[in-house]
Image (cartoon, rainbow, N blue to C red; front, side, top):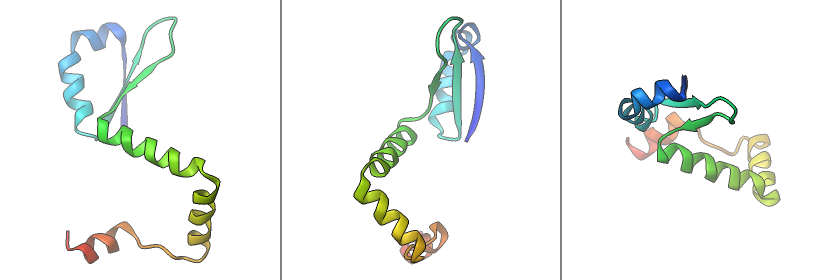
Length: 87
């Protein structure tokens, strides 16, 4: 994902355009306000995906299952899954 960085002043001038850009899921927008930590604007689906990934990886049992599947090569590639599902 591409990250584009703006000052708060720049972001204010083009807020609607930045929202449209972030909503595609192809770009994250970092906004810097002097004296504050930067914030990042991404589309909701991307955020939910990251939160789900963090949730899965925070559970000891789930993480062990993922590791075991990788060692055993018990997984399917994204491309193969798309073919299998016909999409």
